[in-house]
Image (cartoon, one colour):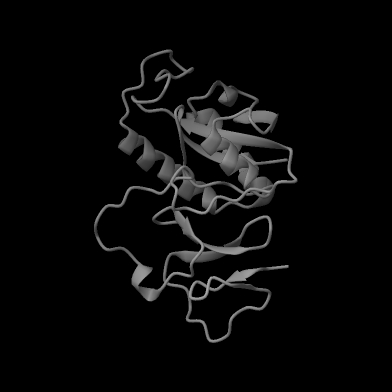
Length: 201
């Protein structure tokens, strides 16, 4: 079942509201694991509960920092009955990361956080066109090609295996446990760097 949120009244309903205007360009409707509808803007990489108005469509021409799962304003979805998930991730470190070295070369990472966000955003755009098994294959390939985490070594494709609550950094855990199986996160910001997460189990 799908739950719709009325931003005017703060109420939820099982019935799709009538006479709603089309979503502005760049916005898509999605559902969290509990069935509640939320809205994604892939271009600006942000999510919100409220249905976007026409004023929120398109680009203003000014640069906006990509929203991340660690931002308080973005909805974070958790399912309390899920005790363990399996996920792949793609990590891009930056010079302010907790350990700014890549397993690939052992050299210090000099990339700024802003440039890391732009690069990861480009990779996310590439992956958004893939679905299902194709998405997992594409994600694995990109992780092995670019990820700064040792989970991206050949044959692993960014696979972290199964993990329970309390095992990962809080923002990473919230994002991973908030995904449905087969769903990919937006950009997630942790002390380790910037991640894309694909839940696979």
